[in-house]
Length: 199
Length: 258
Image (spheres, one colour):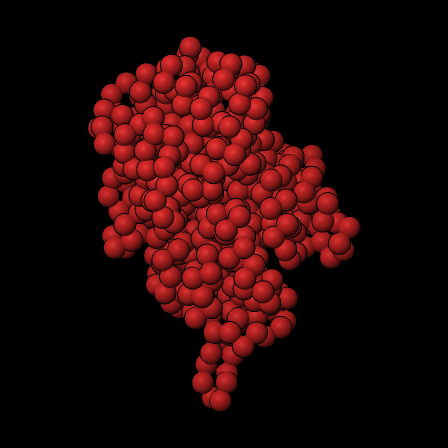
């Protein structure tokens, strides 16, 4: 059973459908007690960092999520769900994140002449053993901010957009991507399949 | 490196794809879900559904289409047409659209752009701009039109593009009305001027007649993505042919499906 955390951040149905396509049961919940008891947790999300943290606090979801990650239970973060893991988000002010990973979330440097948002299909360069078996290396991105981990060993993949940025992180059984596996066709489904295959 | 996106655009009327798609293997070429799945397999990078339903009652059908498409294809798509309020936009995103695009409503109520960006994020907020070359006091002006090119707004395209970026739009779809439907190629001059003027992605639209036109829109028009309808739907060329041409010209592209 995959537990998808709902904190009012857009449509979660495509994430759920992706897991269902892979033959896994997936439920969407905003109940902190369900999250506290969950085995595999997925934290998706779009929108703004500060709003997302406020929504997690309002629903009492911060504590069970932090406990889940600290206990090294299987966790998959998507887009905002990656960014929220860090200590600080700098989107529209300075916001405190879940703080389970050291680092901050910063805006793309527009002086590089790149357009923001970073929108569309880009490649990732996997590090260490993070590379999925058969997946292609093209994934769908849509974001204006990205994580800057303090600890380089957290970086599972980097992507080039006016310079390299961290496009996936991993630590123990935590894995999170800045791109959207549920919008990345076969390559994305492959990553989600790996998440439900390992425990 | 970020790929230049190739985006087929589908007109949907009361839940049915119109202007036919020439997929010989499709039993029902009017079914948006089947057409979307077919384009996903063909390697399209995104899809745009333009709801051309005239009646208000038809709107609910679009929500159902969006829901069914998002449950079937695992790729991003935008929905435009007839979005007048923040609630209209939010419902479409809740139903599974990655982005929503607004056109006349942005001209009429610019605050709507900011409201949608505030609730759904800039990344989900697309503004369509439809410029036309007109003569004013003997001088050519690129004036923004609405209602399918019928109603002039008095706005100048480049200035309006900068304004929608400031209001919170995360992307612009630029449909040059003088070229729309002509198959003579995109208006590279207007596309390049708008693309240079803003820091958000610009999607070229209107006039595609061959794979070369799409490549030109990227190379000479500075577009971040290209949108086309007829050339794909009527089987004039495939997504693969366009991608192969892009590759041969050194334009970054997500490789066509294996």
